[in-house]
Length: 243
Length: 79
Image 1: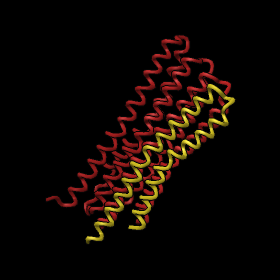
Image 2: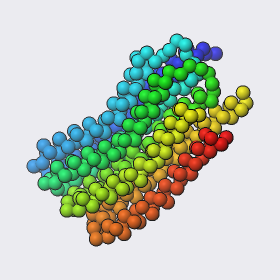
Image 3: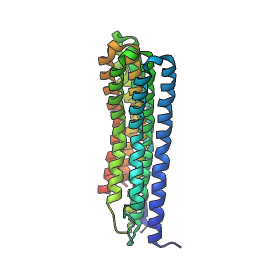
Image 4: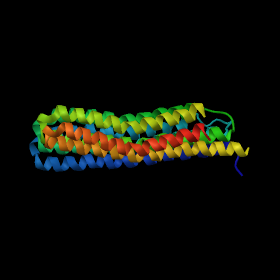
C-alpha cells in the first residue's frame, strides 16, 4: 500500500503537527492566565502598571520557551533533511516519536509556568513593594518547572538525530515507547512544580517575612515532584539504548 | 517473528506505562507541596509539622509512580 519512503514523510509531517499542536495548548492557556491576572492586578494597583507589565512579559516569555522548543523540532522535522530516502520503519518511529515527545513533554511545564507567572502578577498586585522578591521567586520556580520540558527536548533531539536504519519491530516500538514515556511522564511534574512555585509566590506575597522558609519548602516539594519525570527519563533512555 | 512482536509490544507498553503513570504523582505531589507552602505562609510556627506531613503525603502519592516504574522495568527486562 505504502512504501517506507512515503511513510517517512507521513511520520515527519504528523510529528511536526503533533509537536506544535500539543505544545501550543499549554503556552496559550498559561500565557492567558498570566495576562488575565495581570489585568486584575493593574486594576487594583494602577500605580504599579510598569512593574506589572514587565513581570507579565518576563513570565510569558518563559512560558513560551516550551512552544519554541517544539517549533524548532517541527522545523527540523520539516526542513532539517531528516527525511532520508533510504527510509526504514525505525526512522518512521523516531521522527514520529520526536514530535510526540517534545509536543506532549512541554505541555505540563507550560501550564506550570503559566500558573506561577499568574500568581506572581497577582502577588505584585497585592504587595507592589515586594515585586523584586516575587519576580525572583517566580523565576526560580519557573526554572524548576522547565527542567521537565528540557528532558523532553533531550529525548526528542536524540530521537531526531539517531537516524536509524533497519526494520526491527522491537526497536521501532521501543522508540515510540520512549516518546510516550518522556512525553506524558513530564506532564505531571511540570504542572506539579508549577503549582508548588505558584503557591510559594502567593504565600510570599501575603507574608513576605516568611520567604526563606517558603523557598526551602518549595525546593523540597519540587524535588519530590520532579522524581517521576526522572523515572520517565530513565525509562526513555533504557528504551532508546538498552532495549 | 512472534516473539519479536511480543517483545516490541512489551517495550511500547513500558513507555506508555511510565508516561501516563507519571502524570498523577507529579501533579499530586506538586499540589501537596503547594498547599504545604500555603499553610506555612499562614502559620510559620507549624512549619516542621507541615513539612513532615507534606513528605508523608508525597511518599504515598509517589507510590503509583513507583508502581509504573517497576512495571516498566519488568516489561523491559523480564518479558
